[in-house]
Image (cartoon, rainbow, N blue to C red; front, side):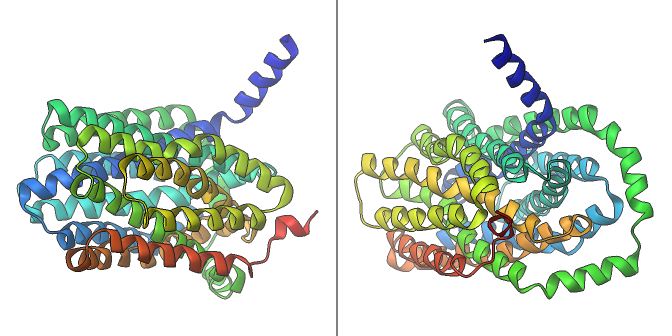
Amino acid sequence: MAKIRRLAAEHLEGQSASLLMGLGHGATHWIIATIYVLLPFISKDLGLSYAAVGGLITLFHTASFVANAGSGAAVDISGRYVGVACFALVAGALALAFVGFAVNLVWLVLPIIVIGLTNNLWHPAAISFLSRRYPKQRGYALSLHALGATLGDILAPLSAGFLLVVLSWQGTALVNAIPVFGVAAALVIALGRNERGQARNDAKRRNGKSYLQGVRELAANRAIMMLCIMAGFRSMTQNGLLVFLPLYLVNNLGAGPVLVGIAMMSIQVGAIVSGPVAGSWSDRIGRQPVVLGGLILTSLVVAGMSIVSGTVAFLALTCVLGFVMFAIRPVIHGWTMDLTSDDMSGSAVSLLFAVQSALTMLVPIVGGLIADVWGLRSVFYILTATISISVAMAFFLPDPRAAER
């Protein structure tokens, strides 16, 4: 028993950096998950249409897309992974707090843009940091990073839902911004000091010419481009569900704020178990079979959501959805790193998230227009189609991890 405790302690210590980065990842998701829960109440208070609500989220994804233009380069050239990540947290928290002062649609535009920019600034820094630090356990380390996102997605809706019972949506935005500042401070204290010397050493090996050559090679890599597009269609489904599930629950099923928070939390619960299992499993058998299985099951669940009408059955499907859909996020990130050299890892992550943002930004506005005309249920038909496309593409992607075995 003592030996088991010792081994567990050693393993936990070895993964401490990934656990801390996971906490930071959770903070970025805490911010946007809070926004998703607040949207139905913001839209009612400010008199926004579905298209206007969808437009705000499209603006978020547009800003995320724009952030990719420089975020990967900033990470790869500077080598300041922790510094960039902490800046993203602080700026995102300030933007969430500013949402609490919004009095109309125009006032929401700037904070949503900042949240979109900083949300995508986080990923090249954090994923590159973990990929370099844990090259043999990449899938597992990135699954802990994704687990942090899952916890943020679980706790933020629950927190926001209960706060909305006693506070306005403005007060809820202000209160939910506070923990993010604490997480940023913890990252600086625990990891910031150790990266300074490493950043200086890395910077000596980088120059503009070699970086641009690496970008050209990255863009010409067919496998990476196909992987990014596949991930983009999956992301379209994921983010479409995050936008329209709360609206469907409130406006079609008559759910209140607490039930909305619980429902959005339930999407993430399954990923707590399935994420680390999927990441570790992909380290052993390869990325493709794990991703493919998760995508197929996701398509079946989303198709089921377009059919069922009862609240209990719908909530049950949201639990299953999180188990199969969110578990494969770190596996896709690990797959991207497998296909990329270390010195271009930040730019590869930027490319991945740029494609995801470019495709995802279409879903909220198009889905909002469809919902205004044909109703919210029709949006689930579109999301079933997007996840089915990603399934088809995953069949044809190369898997270096599987080839090594």
